[in-house]
Each structure stands twice: as structure tokens, then as C-alpha cells.
Length: 142
Ligand code: HEM
Image (tube, rainbow, N blue to C red):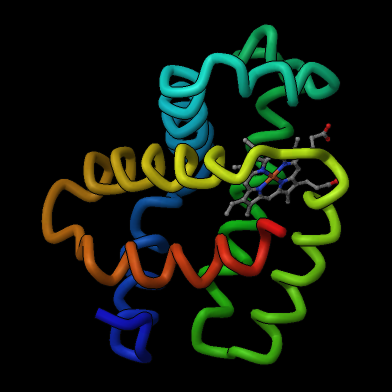
């Protein structure tokens, strides 16, 4: 399955329903990062500056909000490719100097693809998310 227009619209719609708001949004973000650090405990070291020693700290919650805000932007732009590409290039610039091991992006996507279906309840479109997550990650990692 390609990340075609149908898949893009599906992912946008499913993301919009799980991204939620308020405390629900915080819990959703926290679940993703718990799953990231469970799979790759060493990844925590990258986020010392933003409070990763305590994922409940305001500093780390703010970091989670920035990342999910970036993800929200990218997913929202899936049906506007030129702007999506500009946003992904910007995110690439913010990541490439930080020496992030490439496999951490796979860890992150695995975490996302575990938490989104749980939040959604049913009908998670796995092939669409796989294909469109590839588009987003390919633009961010070097
Ligand atoms: C920072 C988005 C994946 C590591 C950020 C920021 C955003 C963002 C918006 C804040 C930039 C700023 O304000 O300076 C994303 C998106 C991702 C993603 C949309 C996936 C689709 C990852 C992954 C890792 C990672 C997988 C490594 C495990 C970092 C680090 C920072 C950062 C180390 C800087 C933290 C600091 O401020 O010290 N990311 N990110 N990101 N991201 Fe990501």
C-alpha cells in the first residue's frame, strides 16, 4: 500500500480522533514516550536537557507537546505535499545535528502504532499508517 490520497485522508482522520485535547492529549503523549523508553531505555539520554529523568515533569510534558505538535502539523499537511515537505525539511534541520540513531525512528513509529490503535478502539488502518509514517520519517531522519 502506498501513502496515496485515500491513505493520507484516513490517517488524518484517525489522528484527529486520537490526538484529543487537554489531559487526554497529555496522557496520549505520555503513553507514546513510555513505549519508546520501554523499547530503547538508552534513548532517554538524548532528552536529559528536557527533563526525561522524570517523564511526568512539566519540562518533559512540554517536550512531548512539542513533538506531538510537530507530528500533528505533519499529519495535517499530508494532503498538501509542498507545505508538508517544507515542514519535514524544517524538522530534519532540528534533528540531524543531534546524532539520533536511525533505528530510534522505527522505535518511535512502533510506539505510535501501538498507542494509536489502543486510543482509537477499532479500525486502525495499519497499512495506511505504515505507508504514511514512512513518508514523514523519511523527511525527518537524515
Ligand atoms: C525535538 C518532532 C522523532 C529526538 C523535537 C521537536 C519537535 C520534534 C517539534 C522540538 C524542536 C524544537 O523546538 O527545538 C519530532 C517528530 C518526530 C520526532 C514529528 C517523528 C515523526 C524523534 C525521535 C527522536 C527525536 C524518534 C529520538 C528518539 C529529538 C530530540 C529533540 C527533539 C533529541 C531535542 C530535545 C531538546 O530540546 O533538547 N522533535 N520528533 N525526535 N527530538 Fe524529535
